[in-house]
Image (cartoon, rainbow, N blue to C red):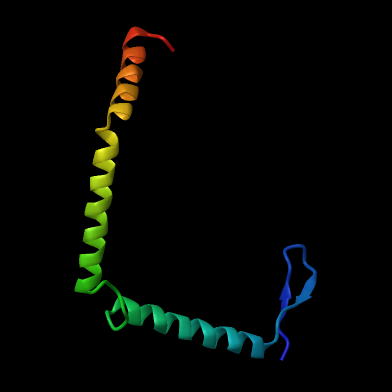
Length: 91
């Protein structure tokens, strides 16, 4: 079966057959079922306790390293000189 449509300028065009629409409709329904199952909590939607623990340890380690870098003498002097330039108008 072929679907005939009319373009904006009045000419006729032939679109895709009904079997292709059926294929697309089936795949869209399958996709929608997958989205609904994840939203309803039936899928794997979050982290388990061990993943939280590992993520927390990594975040604390990164925060410690970042604190050491920011409080080091080189970074402190660079920040101090930047603030001094900003306050004295040396752009």
